[in-house]
Image 1 (cartoon, rainbow, N blue to C red):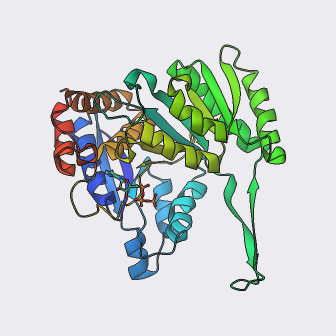
Image 2: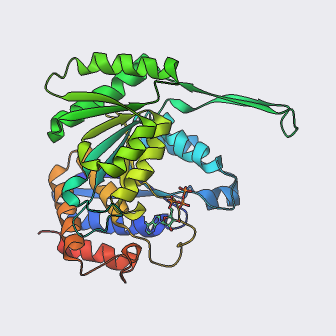
Amino acid sequence: MKTYKIAVIAGDGIGPDVINEGKKVLEAAASGFKLEWIDYPFSGAHYLKTGELITEQALEEMRKMNAIYLGAVGTPKLKPGVIEKGLLLKLRFFFDQYVNLRPVKLYEGVPCPLAGKTAKDIDFYVVRENTEDFYVGIGGNFHEGTKEEIAIQTGIVSYVGCERIMKYAFELAKSKGKKRVTAVDKANVLTNVYGLWRRVFNEVASNYKGIETEFALVDAVTQWFVRMPEHYQVVVTPNMFGDIITDLAAVIQGGMGVAPGANINPNGVSMFEPIHGSAPDIAGKGTANPIAAILAGKMMLETIGEQKTADKIEKAVETILKEGKIVPAEFKGKATTSEVGDAVKNKLEK
Ligand code: ATP
């Protein structure tokens, strides 16, 4: 039987709890293929204990696997940036996962903080460029620790980088039957980098005649995601703005516990994760919502070519949320992390 090798980095805090539920559901859903999990210990806690973030050997092993499934990494005991740069960004850059794909879908039964908006109003994709902009690590400090200190950090945008992410966004729109692609930027102030971004967008768009296009400034987008989410279908955004607006998007789709994400290299190894962090405030309580991790697993199956099984998982999640019998603690219900996972597993169509 076909076997997919999946590298697993469960990580810190609620990461291991939600990943366990994801594994449980994916294993139960798999039909016609098997999943082999290869667990790695990398996390903030592992770094504090061993001084190791991620090893070259592990990266080389992962290169031969079908995908990476990640829970959450980070601990308040670490300075901000250590694990983000040393593990998460390292993986994204090493495997050139240039697409950060974030489906923003409000499922029926999930409470939405926007007055008057329902499941039919919120169903779009954010396609975030994942390898350029201000996240490339170009910069430095001078006179560090003194009052004379100066700091510089540079954002880069390249023609090739824009072209590949925009093509992905338009192809996604085509494959999902979406009719509009919105390009986000701040081209009225950062004219150099986002001027190039706009030029490439217009060029790529000219090859997709049937799809409507528009530009939107990032500040306006934060307003319109709240006022008129039904307007959006596919949104393509540079790295840093994408990081910010996808947290806003997670809230309008119901919360961090239902928001999955994928770091995709269409020709290489991709990584799938719930977008939430390790949530130290709820770690160890058994109340984390595993739906985001389960849906990230669903995206993983979709990407490796197991669409039928992926659809089956989404249907089970949809049914649980709609029925409202098992309500995650995140939505003021009583269900524990494993009760939510079990409920999804038991709803899978045979
Ligand atoms: P980071 O600082 O890396 O973003 P974090 O875990 O502190 O990580 P978020 O991921 O932004 O922060 O989550 C914010 C809060 O949302 C958490 O502190 C937690 O209370 C809640 N939360 C996040 N994920 C979940 C989840 N899966 N289930 C329930 N609540 C969650």
